[in-house]
Every structure is written in C-alpha cells, then in structure tokens.
Image (cartoon, rainbow, N blue to C red; front, side, top):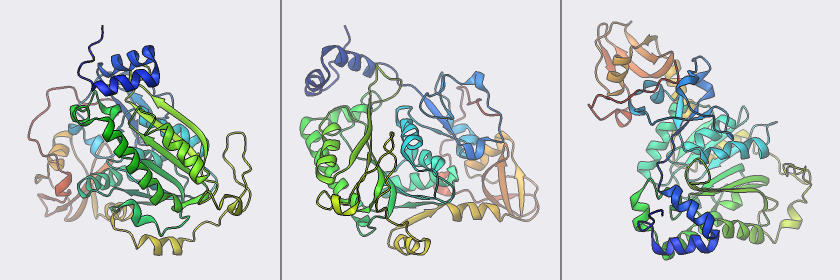
Length: 414
C-alpha cells in the first residue's frame, strides 16, 4: 500500500474524482518516487565537443539533443554547464520541442515572447528552435528571477534574444506583435510535489481557484499581442482540470482559438515531472472579430493560415516597440563583448573553477581584454596585466561555495 498521507486530503479526493482510482493510485505512487534528471544540449556550442554516450542514459523521445541521466551530477562544478553547453531541464517541459517542430513556421524569421520565462528552460529551448533572424523576448516580472533568466539566456548565447522585466499588462500596446507566445503561467504547483515540500504545504482548493483566476487575467492581458495565425503555448505544472483543460476551453470559447494539441504528464506514468501543455492557434484577436480578421484554412497538422494574414512587423517598428519595455539584457550585446577581446586563453579545469568563483588568476597573457575559455567554449572576460588576470566574471554569476565536490563530475561532454 502506497503511503499518501503526506499529500493534501482534498488533492487526493480531487485526483480520484478526476482520474479514477487506478490512474490516481499510479500518480500517488509516482509522486512518492525519486525525480528523474535530464539535460538538453546546446546545438550552438556542443558541435565542437565529443559526446560521451556511455555516460548518458536514454534519449528523451520528444526532444532532440536531450537525455536522461543515470544519476544527478555536480553541475555547479562543471565549467561546461556555466559555458552554456547544456541546460538541466525536466524532460516533461521539453515536450515544447515537439510542439514547436510540428506547429511553428520554419520558412521565415519570427517574433516570439516567453511571458513567464524564469529560470529559462523553455526560453533556451525556444531560442534553439527559432528560424534564423528571429527575435525572442524572454520576460520575467520578478527582479531576482529576471536576473537568473538573464544569466541563463546570455550563457546560452543565441542571437536575437532580449530579456525583459515587465508585467503582462505592460505588453498590451504591442498589438499583434508576436508570432509565438509561451505562457508557462503561475499555478498551484501540483506537479512539483515530489520536489518541493512548500508546494505541498501551500496547496488548497482555494489556492487552485485563485491561480485559475490569475491565469485568466494574464491571458487576457497578453492575447491582444498574438498575431492572427499565431501560436499560443499554454502550460502549467498542475494536474487539475480547473487550471488546465478548463482554461483551454475558455480560450477556445471566448477568444476563438483552435486547439492543436494538449498533453498531460503524470509521474508514475511518464518519465518526468507533472506538466500540462497545450498548443493553440489564434484565429482572431477577439471572439467578436473572428469573422472579420481571417478565415481558417488549415493543413492536416493545423499549421497554415492563408486568408488575410497580417504583414510582419518591420524591424524598425519592432525596435520602437521594444524601447517601451524594461530590457535588462541583450544577448547580442553580450556576444559582441566576448567577440572583441584582444586575446584568448584556454583554462585548465582548476583555473576554470577559480575563474568561476571570481578569483584572480596568476597566469601570463598579453595585456588587455582576454577571453577565457574551457574546452574551447567562452566562459567570460578577464583583464591581463601581464602576469595576472583581473577577473571580470559578473559578480552575481559567481560560484559562491568554496566546497570541493566529492561526487562524480559530469563527463558526457569531452
């Protein structure tokens, strides 16, 4: 008999009503098991590295370049992790890759928004999938979380990416600006129960209702910015229908969106954390304007709108609109800073860790700005004064612990 007394009683009742006894029992058992660990490689940076497949587990079936690990590694002490060579992300969230490959246009540059993007898992994945020349705005309203997002996006390194710190309503004037919007909305966190005891202690039916109301407010604020024919991806880390299927049904009835695909991930059934994700196509900016904006003419996969498509934003107009947002990081600017260094210096593992701790390095290099690398991948900048490197690694990014790891270091990239 699986011990479920640690779960909220109302949650147990709700899942049994929603899923039935057998599937609910499978979920409760899954929530009592250890979480899986998975990573996603950065195609932009790992092409020059050798993949040690013996150190990896199975491939994640719905996401290229993604793998389950046989055990959790000391990622903090892997310079390749800090260089953006890979991202540690739950496999369920990587299902976004399959949605993008199936429903996102690939024949033109796109403008995309990840509205609730911190810490950056879905944004780094989206950046890897966008066609060349696209623009991605990764947004997070909470300052501390936005700083983490900015760090991860700059390390991932894809061009055309901006990080903003704004609330959803701040985007309202960008009418029909985005071809793709990701909304991984704040939720009651049921899918995080086995990772986060706080999510268990804070869960209640009243909190579910409050989250559902907040989610609709967020969607109301952002939907006017989605272009006719655009793709909306809605996701939560919950299981309950009030925050999931009922929200999608509301989007269909009130805003005229067409549901392309939806999927639940359940621990105990799926190899990953709890997640709900749905892909929807925008037909019109409001239900009342549906007939006036465009008629639908879909391919079998539901990917194509041919009637009265809105012209793409010109680069100049897009730049004017972006100036109205609170931009806290520009990946293109960061890449340019790295590219104009006077010289380059490859570091050993020990020196790379010292650099990432923001310590001075007693190494000889030509005077001036130095790009320091590990396995050929940039870690950041330093200033050489001849026999010493003054460390210019961002203070807020540094490894704060002086602990030396005893557990195995990652060895899947060489």
